[in-house]
Structure formats: C-alpha cells, structure tokens
Length: 98
Image: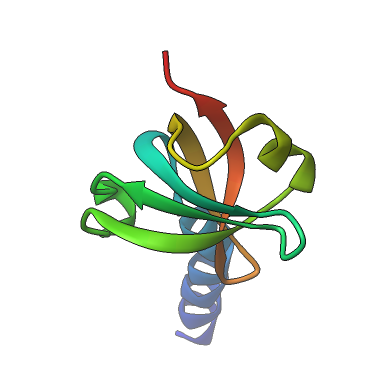
C-alpha cells in the first residue's frame, strides 16, 4: 500500500510543471495604453484571455525583455503573448497588429 501511495505522490509531483507551463496565451489582441521603459512595463487594454480565465480589461504587465518596448507606443494595436513567470504574468512577445 505504501508503494502505491508513493507512486501516486510521484505522479502528482511530476504533473506540477506541466500545469505551470500551460499558463500562457498567444496572439492576444490589445491596444497599447502606456509604455514605461524605465519600469520595464506596458499597459494593455486587451481582449479576454480564456486560457488564463481573464476577462477583457486594461492592465499593467511586466515585459520579459525591455527591448520589446522600443517597437510600440501608446495607441498601437498589437498582438502579444503572455506567460506566468515566477508567479507573475509577463509579456514575452509583442508585435504591432497587421
């Protein structure tokens, strides 16, 4: 019986990283409201993100690489990718929408 419990615990632990990896979404439509290069953040008015259970809203996000902010400005329509990194929603990619 202890062996079964140990195996079940191992399987449970092995699945945890899979859940963390799944907390991302790509190709989300948004409008840039503000770019704050000094704080490494961008304010986005974005569509709903069902994969992260988020309604449409305006929110400030940290960006993974500050160089991304040089290609966008307030008023731009963009598509972005977001991931949960160290427990924080972080923009990992942002491109002007076509």
